[in-house]
Length: 387
Image (cartoon, rainbow, N blue to C red; front, side):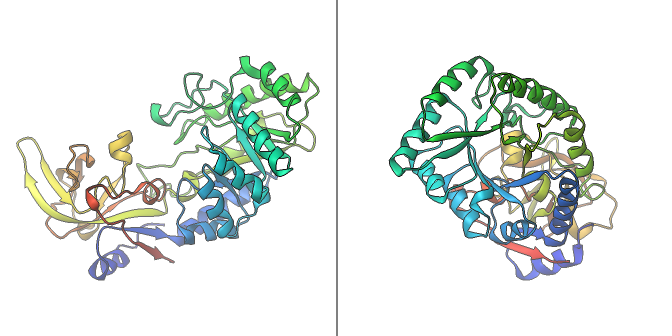
């Protein structure tokens, strides 16, 4: 499923740039592949709203029967407003406020993924006031290296996330004292943009070990949630537009030891929406520097912050000159008053001119949701391509 370059060029004539282009045909094909692979093992998938919360995207994902993975009270409300079921909504996050917990309690969500002793005590207190029992899962820090960027690694003991193994006994004592808490599962999440699938094999083995600790204490859990973090191919999105979901889920089938009647849950975000989105921008100026040429575009780190924040790679294509040999190197930069406002250094492009239309690829995840109005810039519109 390659880009429809004619559609993009026509849209860029009457639609102000920059804008996000969402390829709904690719999104649906990705969702179909994921659902087919997950259904093979009866696995439950929750969509991570933090990746992309565009209403049309949310509604499309919901049509495939996925649940919701939320990290704020507003995400819970947004999921429910867009047709997701509360009974399939999980609430994660290391810093849930009282107001957000109350939203989850009022909506009777599937589970709170709890990250500390104190959080459990607070949820118990708030649930007691409402005369409710809150279903929780313990988010465990498995100390598994996801082999990804340090800012998006979440499963090591040095990270702020999750409960460490040496706290387990204290957790059980806390649960014994909490009459308005029901422990239903264990939750794990080791990081984001994981492309080394051996990390998931390591996670499975650690989950088996941790679950055995609970089984030995006669604590039988309804579900295991192994989080998400599955990466996409930012380098060759046209060759690999859809992730190998079959291979991904097979790892858990092969190495994770579920108990009878125990459900396995996943929280996928980027893997579902990452490749379907493009940031379309226009070249404002070409500037020749001492060591490089600069292609200055009208999109900036305000529209896609990942390169500035994570030094993340995004493939960049000159749509206007797509049939021309690429033989000139450019630093592709935005207009923001920060030197970090750079989408790529020494990007090989055709001879690029003012007015050319450029696509910054794989911007479907953590693009629009992280957009901001620094320099009082306008949040871009979204264009949908149905195919």
